[in-house]
Every structure is written in C-alpha cells, then in structure tokens.
Image (cartoon, rainbow, N blue to C red; front, side):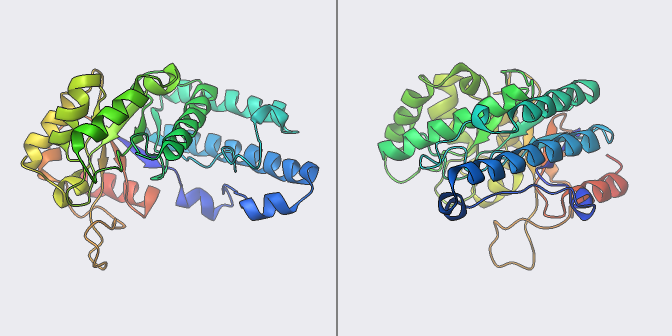
Length: 302
C-alpha cells in the first residue's frame, strides 16, 4: 500500500507554505497589467508550494494529488489568460522543472481531481464544452510536471450526471471522450459516486468501461452510501480489474459528528474490510490531511 496526500499539507501550511487564489471580481476590477502581475505572482507561488509538498511527500514515501487551483482563473473566458503571457512565465517553467525532477527522484505518483462542475456528459453543450477546457487545463499542468500520459498519473472525475436514461448519458460521455486530446484521454478515470441512484461501480463497468476501457476509481465511502447490487468486496475487485496498471483508489470514512453520511471525517477509524490485504495505492481523503496519514501509519503499521 502506497498512500497519497490530497492537495494540502496542514503541517506546511502552519509554516506559511500556502497556495493563493484570486477572485473573478477582483481580477476584472483591476487594470489588466496589474491583474496579470498578481495572477503571475500567485501562480508562481502555487507551483513553488506544490513543489515543496511533493518533496515533503517524497521524503515520506507518499504519493500526491495535485491541487486543481495552481493557475487562478485559468479557464475564465473574461480573463483571457494563458501561462505564456504572465510576467513570471520563465520562473514558473523553472519551478515546474524542479518539481518534475523531485517527482522522478522520489518516484512520487501524482494525480489530480477536477472539481464537481466538470461534467463531460452534460446535456447542456455549454457545460460539456467548459468541462473539456477544464480537463485540458489539468492535463497541460500534468505535462508541465513531466508526468506520464497514462493511468500512472490519473485525472479522476465523476460522471455527475445521472438524471435520465443512463444509456443516453453514457453515449454522450463516450462521444466526448472519443474526441478528447490525447493528454486527457490517456489519463482519464471515473469514480463511483455517493448519492443514491448516482453511478455505482457496476454501472460504470457496464456502461462505460466495456466501451472505452476507462479504469474505475473505487471509493469505499461512496460504495457504502451507494452500493448498487454489489458487495464492497465484489465492487472493489471489479474496479481493480479495470486498471491495466496499479490501481489508485480513495480511502475515507464518514464524520460521525455530521448528519450527512457522505461527509468526510478527520482521521481513520478502521481499515475497511474490502481494503484488507488489497495491493493498490490509496488517496487519503481525510480532513486532517498529513496528520491523518501519519496517525494511520503509526496505529495500523501500514
């Protein structure tokens, strides 16, 4: 089992290593030169922060899920942004290269998880088009980190579209998928979902995997909330069978203080039975981040 930290290191944040963002309102309120300067400085900071987190993970033999927010407002049409127009472009590229070297040095497997508004199968053509732009942004970022165009560096999304006929939704998704850029298509994986009647492992397998070969990211908490007809053990093994390489699954537990059974808890309470002796990589989706990972390693000796 190799474990992944997701996006944020609370320990490094306490030392002042923090990413920055910028709002649409603030960007558009400024003169363009000043707005570009701020976005440039914040993008440079975010790549440096990412590089530091990757090294932090590498020294602990952890993998890392890269944040989706490295380049503020990158896909906002009104901002009309691209990396190569930023004043700090050369420095930003240098930091990507340093991070790439660290990834190779420590053999850190990196992934990313675009936001929930990415819905390639949407019946709204505008939403689908924006989803493609967002996925392309993530793939370009992964290329800049020197990551392989394969499932070793997955871009994980949800279908996020389940109202209506599943076959029609699947057909829309497959039509979009077949026309994606290769740096997206070669990395794209799909995760089972947690809402009742949303996409479970069996449905992803039947409607999507059998037509495309897209691997399924198994999430234990989502399986608990939305199991379909499969037991957890059968679901995890079915998902594992879809990966041509080493699987990357999600590990979390619910927050007992929250009435929402889908809310993530701070720390690991127990290892799910379907994960016992399962030889895959895991992304730890616990709110205590690196503190949760460290406690897990100490208490479970894994």
